Amino acid sequence: MARILGLDEVDSPLKAALASTLRVYDEAVVLPQAHRSSESGAFKNVSVKLSGAEGELGVDVFSPNWFAGVSALIVPPEVAEPLLKNPEKRAKALRDLVAAISSEMESSDVQVGPELDGDEQDRDKAPWVAGFDSPSCCVGLFSAQQSRAPDTGLDGMHRAHTVYFLLAKAGGGVAAQTFHSRVTAALSKGASLDECLKHGASPGPQGLRRVSLAAQRNRARILEIAAKAIGFFGIDTIGDNAAPPSHPYRLAIPMLNVHTNVLREVENSPTSMWHYAAGCVDASCSQGVITSSNPAEGFVTFTDSNGGYKLNVRNSAYNCLPFSSERIANNRDVVMKAAEKHKQQIASADGGTAHPDLPWLRERFGWKTRTTAGGLNLEPPALWGTHTSESYVGAWGRELGIAECRVVRLQPEIVAIAGVEAAKLRAASRHVGVGTR
Image (cartoon, rainbow, N blue to C red; front, side, top):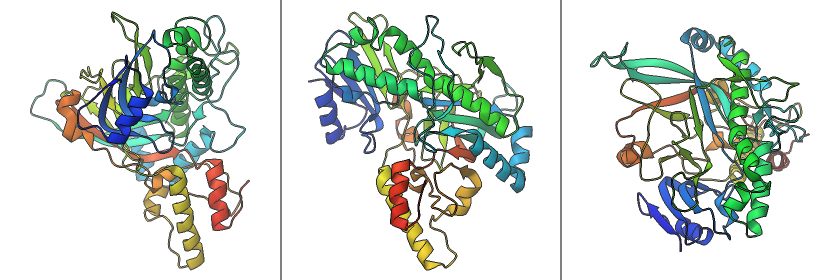
């Protein structure tokens, strides 16, 4: 049986699921807020070490959302504040942002992210679309109150400063999906991780290199597109070295860039070992630290005592931190609950709203949907309460190595979020009594 450790008592169903998936040579450290997603079945907030030489690894340990994460950069107040102070400019910026970002939730014809296979220089063989590849994606302007001194070295003069971030959360799209299908097929045949990723071509070392960069390349392009949509034209960009020669894409240069579902070989290990950050932030290969709460609360990042975002996190969980708060309902159940609220609202005709917080949400969030004119424009399930609030920072900061860090909470201001998946939207529309494309 695999060795399963936890900072707190490990939930029995989660422990049983890990024990049935891992092998005797493997080890898992269960982080705060760890769970198995009722939506995807993937493990969340579990840091795992896997033997590279042994076969018969359960494929359920891996999430199909390989190397997903969050990238963010600072937006100057002179860009952000005019948008937030003027309701008309704010509404226009939100409309432009939603229109600019492609989403697989909008149409089955949209596929985002680069292909997994590249040429001999690891460059893309064909152009690709940047955008949302899952219902959990978002991009937009966030505000935060950061405690820092007015200048470096002025101890005792810390006060709250308003800071604005342009933040994107997305995965690797086509590359991640292809990589997952190939590594799952190879492992199902009894291959070891070394045989899958260090030798051969299924998916092979090139596949691992390509998928490890796909999500952050997608997010960097999303940030560049979003910046133009909200009128931030002074964004720093760099050429995409992996872009096809016919399409020289530009990538935003993020200040914060965190990765989850990371699979990397453990260096200086006496035997071949791989580390997998299942639904958690791998701080060893991330630039800064960001974790997510529910969408209405936003994200949480951390700074050092001087307000710097470059942190050197070290802890006994292989330097990993929780990323997602615990899921309390799956998307299907929440969508049908929302559809019932809309049906009741339409029947009552009393001028009320189906969502209890709709005015606040409509001011800050926008999304693309497949509804016809006059059809059901259902709020994404994440805005109906699929996840709890972040709760680990205060209770587990010392054990996770962030006790001396300052907490910065990013609140949504102008955010494009992925819409409802097509199948779930069709079911909701039938329940309410309207049609969809």
